Length: 113
Length: 113
Image (cartoon, rainbow over all chains, first blue to last red; front, side):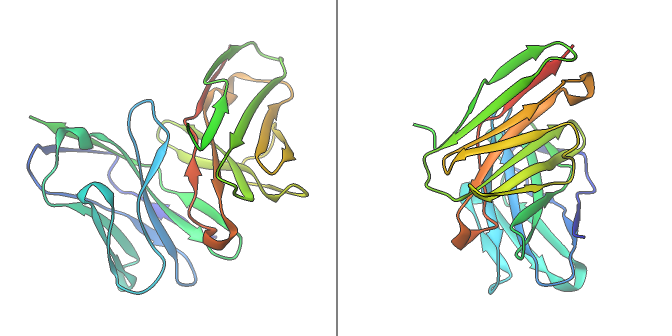
């Protein structure tokens, strides 16, 4: 069965600083990988996804993520964080055979002035 | 108008009551999902449906049932609510051609007293 680990429960970053959120997955085949963001009181919005091809994927709001098969990782990055990026971020792995997603437990991003 | 809607958005009920949460979508997707979110646990899959005649149990289906009334409607029922079913519930949809990319509703916050 697939699984996702997000090692950091909370991260605090200063506004304007760079950000990296970690995600490690376990899956037997080539994974489908996703990052979602949940703003307070909102549903989940897809930031970006990796299915195949270029291992560096670009998403919305200036986010990018890099798939590293050797490390079973799919870390999310942003070069300069804005206060509006404060939210909870979820990494997910998809089972292409059954079309279900397995989510990590989430990382809460706090942005300090 | 929102593509995926959930009603009600908030509900407080008592132990033993029957509760139905409803989800409707205008995206034309064939696949629909119900998740629950608990603090620190991420999202866990309760049930999913690939079409009107197809219902599948997810990771945590005990205590829940579902009904797929039409392609656009997928309801989640708690036959006899208990306090540990207090959570945030999300509905999601996906298209079979992009099966792992899911779109989420705004969520229903359920409190069982």
